[in-house]
Length: 298
Image 1 (cartoon, rainbow, N blue to C red):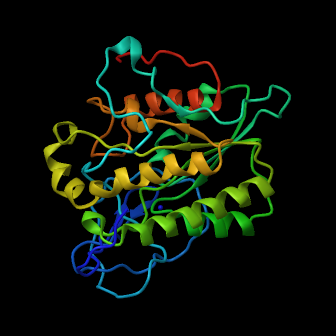
Image 2 (cartoon, rainbow, N blue to C red; image 1 turned 120 degrees about the vertical axis):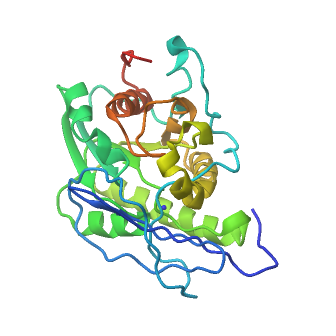
């Protein structure tokens, strides 16, 4: 998964993205439309989906669990590096917004990726890039922070010594920063609770991946309308991830927002093509503290 508005909360609803191996459902708060919680499901390995979000009936319920998908940038994160179209040699130069605790070579080479449909785009690429690591991918489309935390807590299997969190696309916000402080506080509570659970389950280094905030010119025309419904709050999430590493400086921030404002990475606004998967993996490696490899074609 900053301002109270004097008018009513405009809630954006995100909706479900359906695909071969999974759905990225999304419920957001926008205008007068409210959101309802998406049904919980066990964490599974699922492929990203390009299905457009669908609308749910309005509700006045407080934020719970629902998930939007794509969106257009409106505000830049305070400390997260801004998206860049730098020359190929410097594509990964801004890949780490915050390094967090240093990777300790004595730790077991075990890695857990906790993700929604966006990060599931690297479920094969990440293990291939880390052949000497045991990589465990846990996630499903439309996964929200609160649901991820509950499912992790119920799972007896520990997580890796390194955990990469690629979540936040499916979170709740008010349009035009309506009741921003309320939504931000909820996001922060859920993020902090998730991190506490990860540590209880064995995580030593946690790396959170920022959200892509692409220039509209990079979004395919077929996906632009969908992106305009949801991308507006992705910078809000990145702002809170910047705040997260201030509260908890040992967390690392892999800055996908800073390196992904390039063409050819996604087939909509956020879901990865092959080139995007390779670049995201290198961004994750940089956040972990591992050497990166240049991505052919970038």
